Image (cartoon, rainbow, N blue to C red; front, side, top):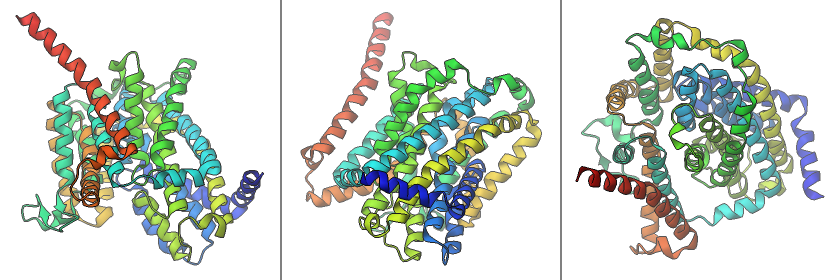
Length: 501
C-alpha cells in the first residue's frame, strides 16, 4: 500500500496548475531544442539554471527533466526528415527513418517514433516508481571493471550494427576511438594528438562531429540535383499515419527497446545513446531479414526510439538513489537541486518525498503531453519535405553553425564541423558508415578511464575483468557477439576461396 500512497502523492503534486505549466514548458522547450540541430538539452538546461533559483524546487526539476526527455522526441524528427540527428541518441534512428522518409513514408516513421517513445516512457516511469531503490542498489554493483567491459561490448555492438564490410566498420570504430582521445589525458593532463593547436586541448566537440558527418555531409551529397532527389518525397494525407502492419511490426521492437533502455539507462554512464545502439543491434540480430535494416525498416525506428526515451528517464535512477549523475544533462539537473539546497542521493526519497514522487509522476504526465503535442504535428513535419531543397539546405547549414557555435562560443568548433563534413562525404563515397565512428568517439575516452581505474585497483592484474562475475558475463557476451559477426564472414571467405580454386 505504501507504493500506491506514494504514487498518489506524486500525482497530486504533478497535476497542480503550477507544476503542469512547468511540465508543459519543459516538454515544449525539449521538443524545440531536439528539432533544432546543434542546440541540445544541455545548453538549454545550462541557460535556465539561474532562473530556477528562488523558484519552487519541485517545479524547477519537473521543467528541467521535461527538457531532457522531451529532446529525445524532437531529436528524432530532423534525424528522419533530413538525416540530421538533433541528439546523439537519434543517430541510429536516422539509419532507417531517413530511408523511410525518402521513400515517402515520413508520416508513419514519425508516428511510430512518437508512439514507441510514449510507450517506453510510460513503462520506464512505472518501473522507476516501483523499483527505484532496488534498481539503485543494482547500479551500485557496477565497478570500474564492469564499466570497461560494458564499453568494450558497446564498441563491438557498433561494429555489429554497421552495414557492409566488417573491416570498414572496425576501422570506423578505431578512428572514432582515436578522435575521442584527442585532447588532455585525464590521468596525466598531457596533450595528445593536438599538433600544437590550443583549441584541441579540450578534445573534439561531439555535437560538431555529429552535425558535420550527418547533417552537412547530407547537404553536400544532395547538392548535385537536389530537386530531383526530393521529387519522390511528396507525402499524401492518407499516408501520414501508420497502417496495421506497421503497428504490428513495431510492437515487439518497441517492447524490447524499452527493456534495453531500462537496463542500460539506470547504469551510471549508460543512458540514451548506448541504449539506442544496443536496441538496434538486438532487432537486427533477431530479424529474419537483417538486410532490411538500414534500408527503411520500421523496426529500426521503433526499437531505438523506445530505448533512448526509456534510457533518458531511467538515467534519473543513479542521481536520485546514489547521487551520481549519469551524463551531462543529469549533472546539470543535479546542479539545480544543489542550488535549491537539496543534496541528491539516497536520502532524497525520505527527506524530499514530494519532490521525488512528484518528479516521477510528472514523467508520465510529460510523456502524455509529448505524444499529444507530437502526433498532430506529423503532417506539419512531413510538409518540410516539400520545401525546395535550394531553400532548405541554407537553413540547415545556418542552424548547424549557430547550434555548434553556441555550445562554447567557439568558431573553431564550426571549422571542425565543416572539415569533418567533407571528410564524412569522402567516407560516404567509400561506403563507410559514420554511426560506429560516433559511438567509438563517445565510448573511447570512457573506456580508457575505466581501464585505468580497474588496473589501478587490481595493481596491474588484467584478470580482474574475468574474476568479477558481472564483468565476466559482459566479456562473455562481447566474445559471443564477436563470434556471431566473424564466423559467417570466415565461412563466406572460405566459400569464395574454394570457388576460385
